[in-house]
Image 1 (cartoon, helix red, strand yellow):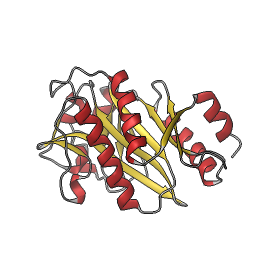
Image 2 (tube, one colour):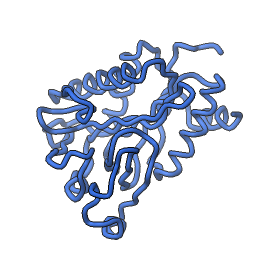
Image 3 (cartoon, helix red, strand yellow):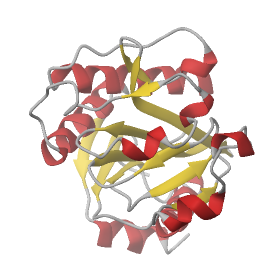
Image 4 (tube, helix red, strand yellow):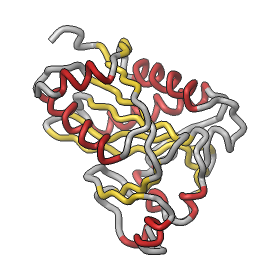
Length: 228
């Protein structure tokens, strides 16, 4: 396959979580068959809580019915990590990429997101410890990471709070950390909105992985993935 050092970046509209999950699965199947290059999907979701493989009932202390009554969906996933929230104004990125070393892959993703958040004017960094995977501003968490790798190709990915409502985090135990305080670019005083940060994050991600970013349309990606 030509263009093996490219990173395809595909901007998508706001997509319901389950629809995006099905798309990821098709794209991963195509990547596993070497039909497409490594690909980064960038999008937003309607309000949804997603639970990882290590999640438990204590992360939703008010009971599932209460959260659904607030208009927030709940979806179980096979990704690493614990519960998180996605909603409008939060940038979600799903890298569908060949992975040789999971730990280094996650660390590179962290470096990319730290670079992007710093570029938006917020002094971000990382913290030691598996439970603190992600991007932090002091003791406040601004970006979460959780992936799943099958046949050496990743799925799921990251979420960075840009200008989204942080209230839904307050009613749960985000990331399995009962004392964590979530923050966002807007909360930290950055004027950067979701559209600008989406571009910044895409460039930072490609740069961190040593790739040349190539923008592709959703139509082309779906056409190539449906061949898998």
